[in-house]
Image 1 (spheres, helix red, strand yellow):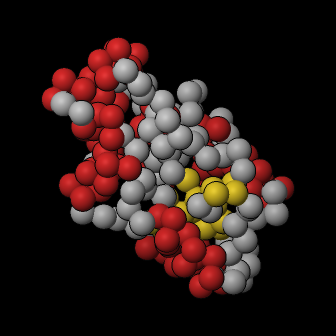
Image 2 (tube, rainbow, N blue to C red):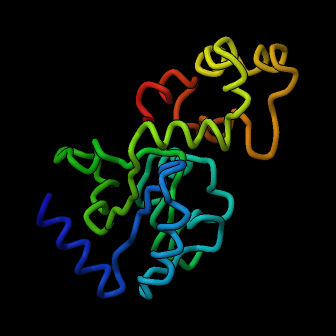
Length: 190
């Protein structure tokens, strides 16, 4: 793995590698995106928001591309880029570490992975305050948010959706979400 990481860095410096920016919600990713845009002249992020290509935001990039890294790579290059940010899908860790990975994952050695981390409880409360404040109304609202029963939440507190507070803030776009319910989100995301 160490050799593959050095290889990816060399390829990127030569203009042939790729950069995967894993943007964890409420962990300074938008700020890190700005730093990457200014500090890495060789990084060609496709136009979009917070380093995420237009149309890819809110989706798991691997699932969006049929779990085929070659397809993701080709799509990124077709858009004129060599770098992208992803906020809702996981880093392809099992494929990165698995020596017996499928043939279409062999291109993983050309990718550099970048992320920013934040103290978990600070991150959790930041997301609650900024995106899921309706969950903080009372203990029943919090339990309802964690259960994923957003329709019941609307009955409890009288509203749910707003520009910054919606179920896709939690899981990602339907069909390409992190998980089918917030159970995985609350247990694993933080």
